[in-house]
Length: 255
Image (cartoon, rainbow, N blue to C red; front, side):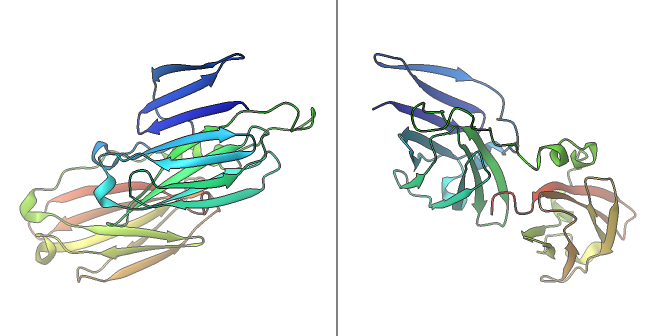
């Protein structure tokens, strides 16, 4: 039986390609796959994908972000858009078997961390297996690709705040609602204003004032089922101002 292996770790992708008579292995370096986030180096994680027939086995292989990892959500998307979901923990060697179609499925994964951050780090296409799929099968088209390509979804550079004035916020998303919470920081009592903006793929923006007490929260309604951008600016009583947070949040693409 034919067998393929894919190995993904942040910017490093190892692809095992089957030859007709034996398994041949090639190692290559490339930029992140299309539709994935640029994961900070200290939060990178690795997942190995093995395809055998219609079955796809995903195995956690560790990474610098292992100790901070909460879980990894995986989705196998058939060419007709059908989704099969699975979850991996942070134990090296843990695996989950997902039932694919064998028709060039798309495998997508998002890593979730204990600090509330999440990154779409995996977006790989599996192999089409002749004899299993009809000859006229149609490849899966990512419904979020056009939204992801919007210039409004490109975060602006953020500024480093001096440690003695550090400010921490946490953004969480649940299908249609985006929640942004104030989580403290050394600069908590020096804040004059803290403004959070939700930016949609069409460039529209909605701005709200966030309080400076731990647990204070503002909420936004997501503009679509793919992604929105959250940006934050803080000004202090000494007159300084910083654009310190700017992230694209995936809404339900990997739910």
